[in-house]
Amino acid sequence: MSEVIDVTGRLRKMPVEAGQPVAYTIAVGDARVPLNHLIGHSIRIDFDGVIRCIHCDRKTKKSFNQGYCYPCFRKLAACDSCIMSPEKCHYHLGTCREPEWGETHCMVEHVVYLANSSGLKVGITRASQVPTRWIDQGAVEAIPMVRVRTRYIAGLVEVACKSHVTDRTNWRAMLKGDVPELDLVAERQKMLAAIATDIAELREVHGDDAIREVNESGLGLSYPVEVWPSKIKTHNLDKTPEVEGVLEGIKGQYLILDTGVINIRKFTGYEVRFRADAS
Image (cartoon, rainbow, N blue to C red; front, side, top):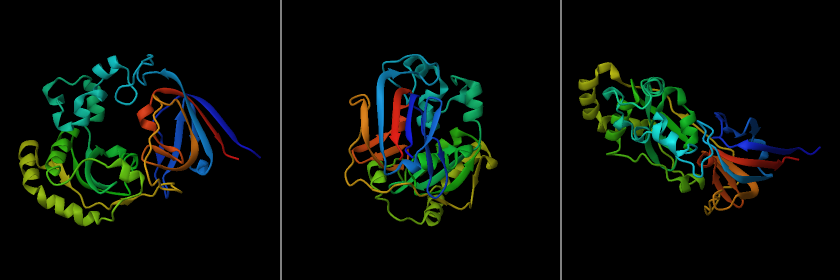
């Protein structure tokens, strides 16, 4: 019996569920379509030319910060520069765009971690976002290093780490499955030793309990990929509103097709039609 999937609506970041492998769902409007069982099948995404802000639902000619219209991009705390550079957090100065949002998203426990997405990298995330953040980055393994009181302090610890390791993922290498083997437990010990003076100085300013080193286990992650691409060709809905191909894998927030890869998160807010023949 054939199973034809045909849904329309506004595209959202793909929900994920940790497992072996990670389980993916594509969110189109109110529809939630499990994707793992569609690997090996043809899918098609058609962009109808309409982009709507994921916050206010306003039509916008261009998406800012993965799904927002320009007015929301300018006014929302979620779009402030300190989200990308948490060491620039200005909540304590009383100038947060949305103090209540800051209290629930920034003034809560964060984790500074090491991950292996395309090699060793450092990153931060809210404690509640573990392991979702690691999955979205396509990490094959990640391990907590310190837990801190706020996003701002996490950013300061990350800055100290960036003197020794990158905070970026080589997304092309990540999508090719070109990831070296690493001992993250050993890397964590090396990093903590390297930033020991920085942590001591931060504790003097923010309190001994503001930064807590942890000895937690790491998490290994695998992804539903049947064929790793040898070359990376990207699909862009702004340039080519019809994307079609055989789904060969999913990693991070990317669909890997035999015709190229598409970053679903990049096109959050785009009105699309998603079709697949799962028969």
